[in-house]
Image (cartoon, rainbow, N blue to C red):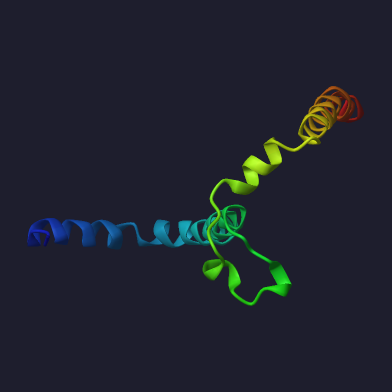
Length: 106
């Protein structure tokens, strides 16, 4: 699908008119791309049978296992203990360290 010439000229004029603003936004876009979106590539490790240094397949060529590891974690006998410890640490951090930082700031 091609844009009509008049609309194409408007788009080019818009970017040319505000070129300095676009250049100022460029470092933020590059930062977000590098530190926010590229790390999402590693999320697929949770769904693959990735062996790490011992396997030479790499992340993309590792076999897909889907939710098998999540199922194994939720069915584990340690799940309730891990969940309880995580919640205790999170709540204690919220109740202790958050007010302490405000008190020290005052």
